[in-house]
Amino acid sequence: MTEGEQKSGRSMDSKENLPLRPMKNGSIIHVVCAKETERLRYVLELLFSELPANPIPYAVYTSANEVEEREPTIFYGLAPERKGLYIPNAGLLEESGLERKKISVKGKGKDVKLFPMEGSEWPDFDLFSAVFWLVSRYEEYLPGPRDSHGRFAPKHSLAFKHEFLQLPIVNIWARELLNRLEALFPWLVFPPPHFDFLSTLDIDNGFKFEGKPLWRNMGGLALDLIKGAGEDFKNRQSLLLKKAEDPYDGYFWIRKQIVRYHIRVRIFVLASPKSKYDHGLPPNRRPYKKLIKRLKKIGPVSLHPSYSSYKRPDVLEREKQALAAFIRNEDDLKHVRRHFLKMDWPDWVHEAGAAGFSHDYSLGYAHSLGYRAGIAHSFYAFDPRTNKQLPLRIHPFALMETVFRYHQVCSPKKAWEITREMMETLSAYGGCFSSIWHDRSFAREAEALPWKKLYKKHLKLAMELMAENQTQPSPERI
Image (cartoon, rainbow, N blue to C red; front, side, top):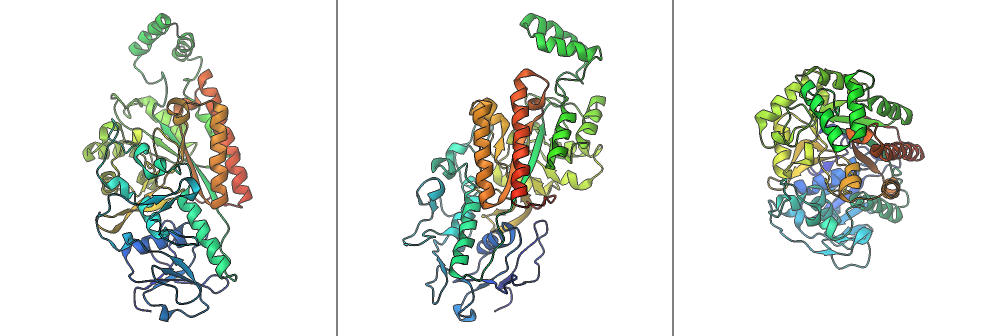
């Protein structure tokens, strides 16, 4: 084996290679290919080192002569010279830059195949290229329509068009790959599926009335009377008379649920002046300090960059510093999710890295449920234009409650059925299910009550699924 051909598992939060160690049964997965490339190494690292509960050691060769007969082998694009799993090669991983504008796709849902090839056995498609296409977000680097906020819309994605958006298709393929290897080489024993869960909260308002100037709240009382908004009038009046907390102050309730169900959580809060799309508390006012104090009792607090900071590095840095005045843990300031999910994928990835962020949680759709990159697991971004892996780690989410409430409107009962199905499906294949809830969905108001119940139910299910998978939650592993 030549220098540089040997690869091994990498820890989830480190870019340093670990020593190559065989599994308990002494085996190493051998991948034989015509050409080892940065793209291929990226995909293999994801499939063997990142997705499994424990890294699976592998090695890459450009000649089958270096692999012994009995060793478990994958032949990528090369006719198998002995027993092994054959994966066809469509050529994408040997390209450099953006060359393909349209790819062939066959089938729908769980049976979808990207880069299909003639063959009678699975995988009859270029599995490695399919994973790379989805996870690198190749399609978002290509020119195409965007919505009114400049965002890539789900209806333009392959996942939407071929009905696998709500499936963790990369996790499904990865598990099937291990199953096939175990069938070919019965002495192989891979880790079982590993289910994890992360609850994330977006604090877009903080409080409904508290923190507003007195004149605005007095004017609001008058408007509440005119509009017949009796509940708002009562809540606003009680707050002004110091007889009750703000309607959006549900933070003690949230904390109780997080503690009760032993769930990992991360909170994203605005730190900007008010604008058309930014309605949070200004960080220079006393109620903001109270808000951060409440949030820190729930879990780690990180930045939710304002809509106004889009492609304005100076504004982004100002907001980061504003939050830093209240956050002692510097690591929390390295985590970020854009407000409105307003981001242009290629540009934001580089902008976030330049601003000192190492973890981004913006990858998902504002108007649709599902896996934007086809994967339920964090991963390092990869820029196909430069053929380089980037240091920014992406944490995709699968579900946001506002999709149920305002976009794909459905009853709380139906929302629960969809949520449960998505979580149970992922549990069968392994991965991290991440959800987003907003502060207004925890309000002490009648319309928020069903969504508080849904939040509680999906935390309970997450705890049960992790127990079934014997998952030990670890801070930022997946």
